[in-house]
Amino acid sequence: MHSAASLRSAFTVPHDWIIPDWPVPGRVRAVCTTRTGGVSEGPYGSMNLGDHVADDPVAVQANRALLAQSLAMSSSPAAVPVFMNQVHGTHVQWLGRPEATDPVFEADACTTLEAGIACVIMVADCLPVLFANADGSQVAAAHAGWRGLAGPAGGDGVLEAVVKAFGGPKGLRAWLGPCIGPTAFEVGPEVRAAFCEPDGDAAVFFRPYGGAKFLADLAGLARHRLRRIGVTDIHGNDSTERWCTVENPSRFFSYRRDQRSLGGSGRLAAAIWIDA
Figure 1 (cartoon, one colour):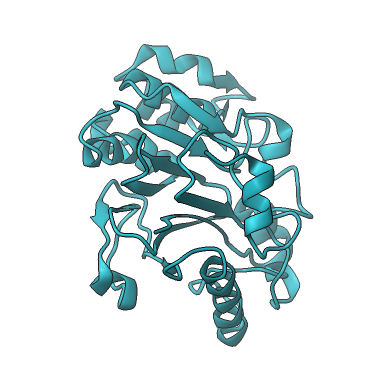
Figure 2 (cartoon, rainbow, N blue to C red):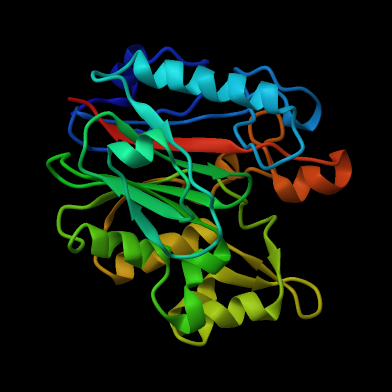
């Protein structure tokens, strides 16, 4: 097992990128980027990794190359980051070498058994969730916006789908990254209904906020759903302000904060992979 301090020494990354501190085998590596370390400008400054926003494509590719370089320098074989076309769904994509060289798929989670393939999730308010099993033989990453988290018509969401891809919750560890926090995530009654109609216990994660609106705890909902299906070894985002993308503008991108006021928002990335 590696501590956060020992893992940080193994990476060549900007000082404020997040190295998850969780009890996984040493061959499991993970990192979550911040705004620091890239070449983008304006509302995308500086480490925007999203190529679907209005940022300069040359800058985005340079930022992705910087991420790939950081991952490659910290693992053997050199880890290759795989980006997906995220669609707020529940599909889990298995990654092998073809996907690592030519990713053309739509999915909101990915998983692999192969060393050197980095599962990558991009976010700018949604919640990134990383997974690893007890022996480090399988890792996964999930994009948990409220739609993917709730799932279709009260069915299984993206986190349940990932746990199924591991064959169940036994020995599974999860790490939650930064997302919009419970003092900033204003939602309508349809969002509350998507969670609370099939599961009354989810109501505690919604607080009335003016008229028919609510403030929702996205990370709290994720922890609740994970525990409900047997995943109890959960780390990272505890719904406090330091994890909130909206409340930390110098460190995190936030679509809700930046798109209206600045005309655009970049994307952070959380990545996990297996070292040989």
